Image 1: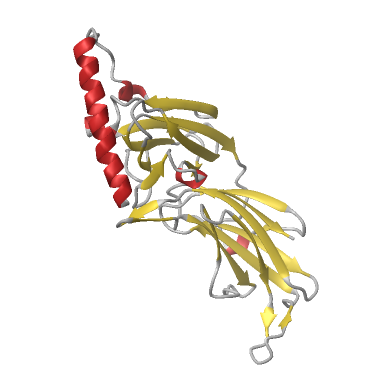
Image 2 (image 1 turned 90 degrees about the vertical axis):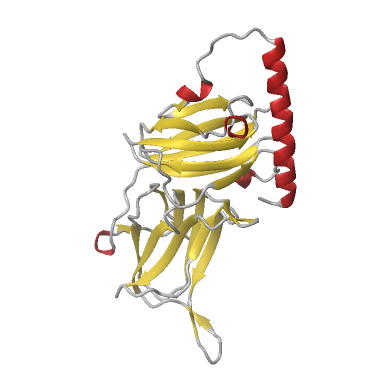
Length: 287
């Protein structure tokens, strides 16, 4: 974490420990079921759970696991807000499979005191009937609110069965967490023209690396020619830093740098996760 975050970490932990000690001395001890034992989010619609200061990772040194079994194929958007009485909660969140194993390689940083929504909100692609766990390692109490949306997955799974994308039509799709299958769409140009593709994404990110925070998780869009060859070597990427964009594809003369449209024919768009940790929902439009 950043140096200032490390200082805040130690300060909050000390304050929380002091508060808990006072509560234990001046309160009547009543046996209670551990709050962390039954944290569950609904499989559809909206729901939330709360992790208290007393049950957070900084105090217990144990992560909290929130169980979620999806009733739909679509997305779950998780928003984290402060629920601490002694400071602003922050820490790590990891999206896991039904065995509590991370779906990807990295923990993701969250910070409820940060003004940027991307450090407090994550979206993951989920499959109907599948159980997931959200692992929370928090410094301070935190509220986790979930919004589950159904998204029909109708894209082709390979270039040979790509779904047609018409002009001025918007398609919604989802990249399922832990699933490496890509979505394929096909576009038919009947005349020479520039091709403009617009996309939006709701995804995850904010991965810690050393003392910095990166936003490399995201959804990747690549244009292919009818032969199966990439039209260009680079690709369009939607992530938490840049959740929407419009990309124009054209042919450029190397000598004059004059731009012209693509030749008539069939083109394909491949939509996929950027890396094994990435997932989420997206829209794609041929403008």
